Image (cartoon, rainbow, N blue to C red; front, side):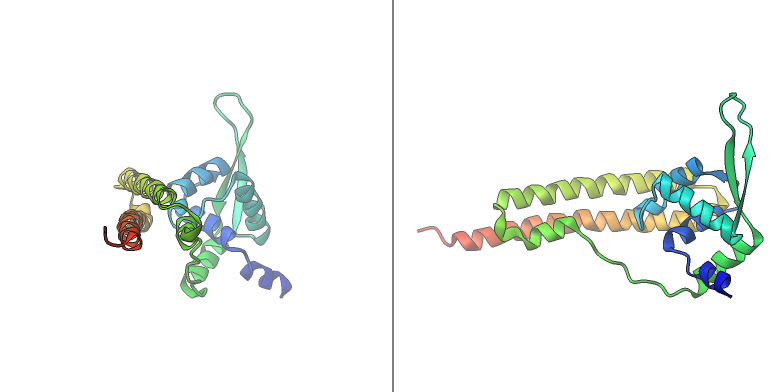
Length: 196
């Protein structure tokens, strides 16, 4: 019974890695990192290599994944690849259907700086927001490119929708930063008061 409880108490990173395996491909840790960078990082996070390998061990111990060594054609070291087990597919499907959905936790660096704007010069605050605009646009473009790269892959239909969500999210972040720049300009013009 304790083993069953431990299986259900897997951390979110385990479920994310198992979810990457649920697309049915046999993947190495490197492949999993690449796939997470192309999808998970836009809306959750992208686990590090060490996190991925730790979670793969945990998933194997739980019976949710299996692995094997594959000889490399280049003569380099053999590569370990992982596949989801039937039990793992059942577990991740059950988790996706039944686990409570945690509300997003907003940890927004530019917003924190704006909150502390009284400690900055208006130009400094504006620079933070301009940098955030540039970052958001860069991420929006990456989401579009990754979605374009996944077109035609039937298994990636829903991940492609999450990339579309990411594209819209980063577009709204870009636009919110622009609106805040206008708000700062208005605030500063009111502070300066009418010209004598």
